Image (cartoon, rainbow, N blue to C red; front, side, top):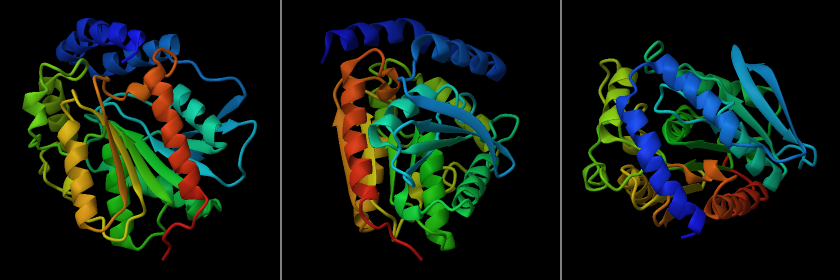
Length: 305
């Protein structure tokens, strides 16, 4: 573990975790995260950003100057389904997109509590279909997400598998939130060890998002979904995260459904640590590993129907 990570972890425990524990106003959460992202997360040089309509809503297009024509990342940002935006995650995706020479497309999806489930998964499915309609080849398309965005990425994958849509070449997730029923042992076992996520806030955000729907609905909790026929999956999560068991159990489920899956459990790293790529070397190491996986998947043919 690097010295910078040893400094970052207690900083997050003393600042971010108490903030998330107390925060109750979605508008304030969104505003503060936007400000913090501009202060702490910076894009590499040589990357262009532009907003374009996608399925009736804005989507941020991130394009490195040196791009492998056709290779595309469809990335769904995290934020407990309540906050976050393409802008808050643009620096991390710029860094990843530059590594693989890919265009990244980040949809602005509906947020709870104003627009609860199933508005977000419905929009992500519509945005994916709209992206393919522009001529994107699914064999060169990778879907990804972090935290609640990982939830939506796998809800999207399950929708695609069930609906007979063209499948992407692969799907990845960083510290995904996959079970809104909070049935994993790590929710309790890592409650004190997780330096960012408070269990109480996670459960409250789930209630706001579900708005009376069952937490076990596979579109809300894709841990319970059917992924038969899905393309390869790449997952990473920290061993001190309350969401650890979400990734571990999903990997087991995917293997049982004969889906190829790579799971990496890192030690003592915070929730969605690659977003700290400006701050800790472990973040860049993970982005390097992910970039190598993306390159491999888009050099081969994805399942199509």
